[in-house]
Length: 414
Image 1: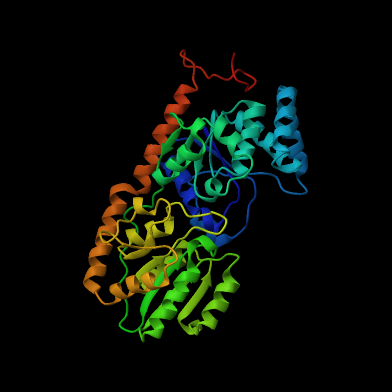
Image 2 (image 1 turned 90 degrees about the vertical axis):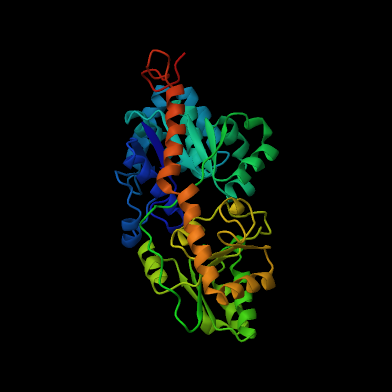
């Protein structure tokens, strides 16, 4: 039995995690999923269906069940639990440590023998408390900020994780350079993926303004400010272009002010967060190009391989992006998309202009983009690879006689 911990459910920025859980379950893996926090957003919850149950950590004023579950975990191994909480208090609030002990009890009673969490952050810190208190090992899928702007706990998490999954070869090389002691056989590259066969190619863009779409969180590393400046440059050349940005984040007001200052306000729409169904409707209105000019933020943060790029490519939409991080593992310049230097407004504008001037090239790049997704970024294929890794680790956690390496208390066997 596999267990997983969600930081939030549902949230727009982690739909790829929900897809992975649902696909693991569709492929026959039993998954016990617990969410630390929950948000009642009906439309988003509907699109984030997990193909199975989700356990929610009790909320205020229901802390008594948390205390009761934590007490059960504590009674089995008080010394280990005390040490686990001491470690946890270096990184989390006390109530989060109590929740971790409660989760340890729920996972143990469900028969979970391995945890898999996304991001080397709060969820992984909770998993480490569970490992220390209840003996359940864990693995981590490492993404972007959790690697490039790491929390203080990351060295401990990487050292103790049973395995690390990198979403790109770039991430693997980063870990090799910055955490050489944990590499060996622990690090595995498993790309994320998008569902196959359920995204129809959008119609050709209308004959008026060339429609450009970006889907992203509104944070520095996504390069949306660069994109707005590039649109302003194209408008200054007399080109008819409009930009739609779907997503929300801390820079939304700044980006809106930038668009107004550059006199592109009427041609730049910041829609805020959108569900998958709403994005489908935007694509069906016609998208000339999907543009995401990722860059390295001032704090060192950068993208991994954006799932939004994959979603555009599976719809046969030509993409323009940059060679930051693992993106060249998805997009090959001139073959299935266009790559420009990060932060280069003029190069970005020229790339978009080249697509505006050549509809035939748009179609060729779009078809090649879809082929690239089918080749290496399909959800079912990539989740199957992850499942095989998890099954191998679960097998290694079992003793030669076929029994669990944990004893009847849930502690590691002697």
